[in-house]
Length: 80
Image (cartoon, rainbow, N blue to C red; front, side, top):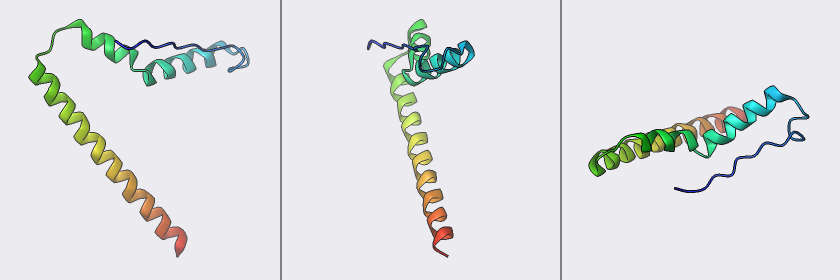
């Protein structure tokens, strides 16, 4: 388990507590703290973990490909 040091300072949010909470939640999501806790709650067979990892990787590849396509379409529109 990797250590995650998630800290939100009042200065970052100008003392606004709602903004601090939102920022904290965003940082914990980015550090994947909640997901890791959920994963550790129950045992998963190595084969299941491997399959899930493959599915996540494939989705990420598809997402990246869509991003590239949109970027090239935007460039074409601005060129015309």
